[in-house]
Length: 69
Picture 1: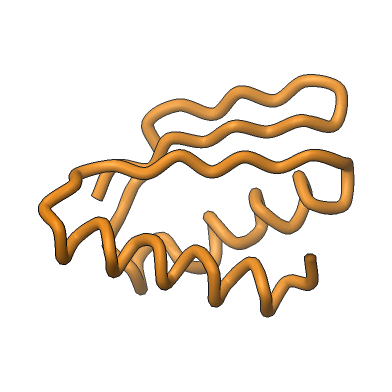
Picture 2 (picture 1 turned 135 degrees about the vertical axis):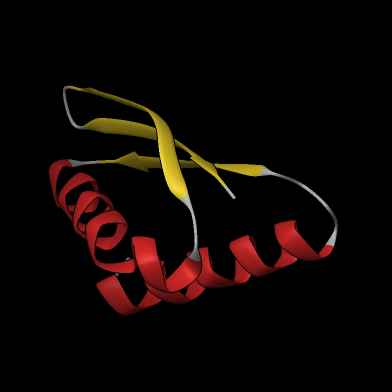
């Protein structure tokens, strides 16, 4: 996925989660490029979308992030 596709997908998931009263989402990425894009996205959009990361698991090109909304 491109950085723009990831950004649009995550914004939509965050907005839907907030709309339905969920207080967290999980993000999964496979591959070094996706891992880098996700980590960069978290840093750049943290204040804009009002979330913080609770857990980040990263190992051998796999990333799993729990965002608390």
